[in-house]
Image (cartoon, rainbow, N blue to C red; front, side, top):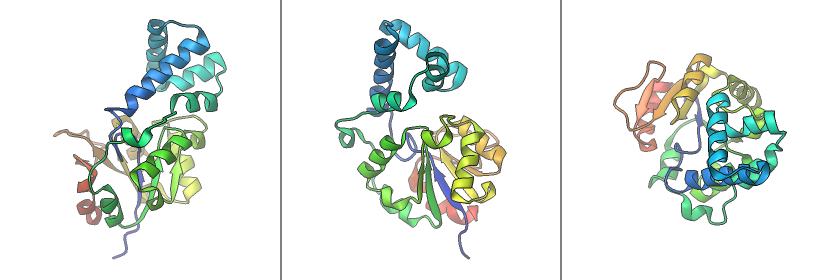
Length: 214
């Protein structure tokens, strides 16, 4: 039987582990950006970031709405890595695992396009994906906003009910499920909420799920 699902992968903390090196760098860069461009000290910059995160789900949205920040300038400044490959942490056998998955594969990330491309190249898996859908493509309306999901479906000419969302963030999976996608939560957790169809510890477990998702 032909596999007619489309795999939609989050990037950070799904296709690779961003927590040890990459997220700390981005967090520091964002705080520094607010210090430089808004004239804040480190404590005030951190507090404003937390406020915008709680209110809008992303620092960038608050900056765009309240400070007329150029999103491209912000994203370039905060996702700039001179030694990105050295910071990448991934599962051994990632490429082989993805190649074993039947069907089309897409990336849907809240990160900017230049960073997503660089990470996929560093992982050696860029050629395995038909599309990389980044924050720019959502009109700077990041997940879990459904707007970006709907744009992703239109751009790739796919139906939500034929897609499998593979994510580490529950809020994003909740939106995916509401839209009709199958959901796979990548997390070391023994208990998952009802909108999660499958819970896996790492991507190496995905191939054995394929037949259950068709």
